[in-house]
Image (cartoon, rainbow, N blue to C red; front, side, top):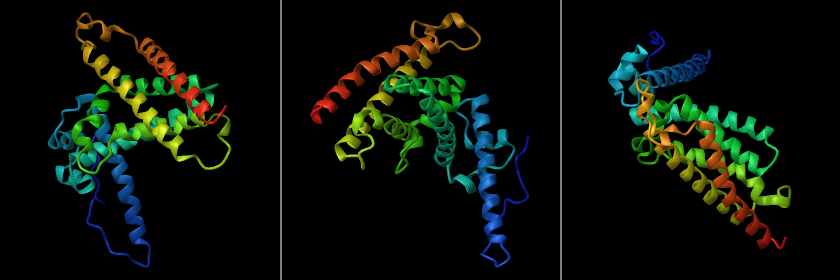
Length: 240
């Protein structure tokens, strides 16, 4: 289905009748529409689509894609941001249900694996090296930020309501988050690489045969074993 629009036109100058505001709103809505269409195309056709392929799948022209995203990296980043928005909502919902730090870690791992399992093609598309080129931080770095936000309360312990977060605690949260994401991503990449294609489930090797729920449990246990040490040292450094 085509998502082209007669409103794809050069920007107009500010006007007292509000046309500039309406155009900005239209452009933002159009960009969101293209991001959703690109995500669907990658989900169904795979992460190796070129900009020509994407334009054809979406039902628009390559020039329109370049107008809104500059290049393929820009499109990858935009799709990654959309996925991150959904992941943030899921993490917040899971964290609200979690009873403590261990449950919060399990919830984060579960959300990440669910996103990967639901659309491995989109996951591959937004985590490829070109999506982190230049000054673009990339999907994985943004996920680490989400994890750092989630583990800060655990690192602060009883001091979580004591005012501004100390720099040392922020550093610890960022390092812990990088380790969490690195471990999970490494395991996920191996898991995906060993999974069979839909035509022959017998092709799966050992890692690829592990069910998603079992993988989530393994990762959560490993991360928690490390988290216990981090929490203990954090409390000892505060004299607790």
